[in-house]
Length: 196
Image 1 (cartoon, rainbow, N blue to C red):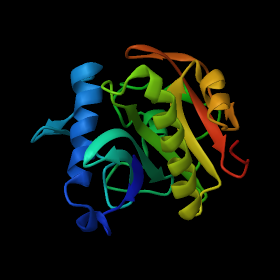
Image 2 (image 1 turned 90 degrees about the vertical axis):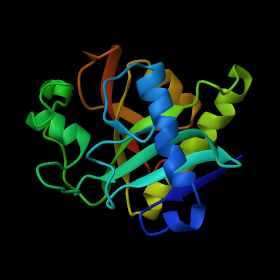
Image 3 (image 1 turned 180 degrees about the vertical axis):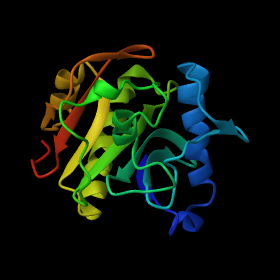
């Protein structure tokens, strides 16, 4: 397995990998989780999939096993910025509660958002931890390469246990809230802390 960070500037170097990320996202979020999200041509996408974002794939022979999207908190595209900030401002129409943060969402070149995190349901349980670690390491490395010192994410409320296992140092920045299919919480991940 390998990890690749994709952007609009380099996607042409990686064949079908960019499209395969969106196909794997559709399988994970629309087919498996039954979320109501935009889709076309067998791919899931949204308004944050712009040239401002980066996409990380854990893959093998074009098969995407896991992925994550990174978006700068300074992003702008029409009325949209990044998902957490737009939810707080009410731009998303209530699909994510506005009260998800205790403080105003930051706009800072050193703060990026991590979203659309998935691991394929086809990965056997004995391999999932390895895939998670590869994804987290690539996410941290890619975010740091973009100048980020902090990542924001909406995570399952069980995040403290999972993040510690992955060597991430994080803190809650909002209340635990029920969103869609479970309890979630916004967290801030310190990218300056060392991974184990």
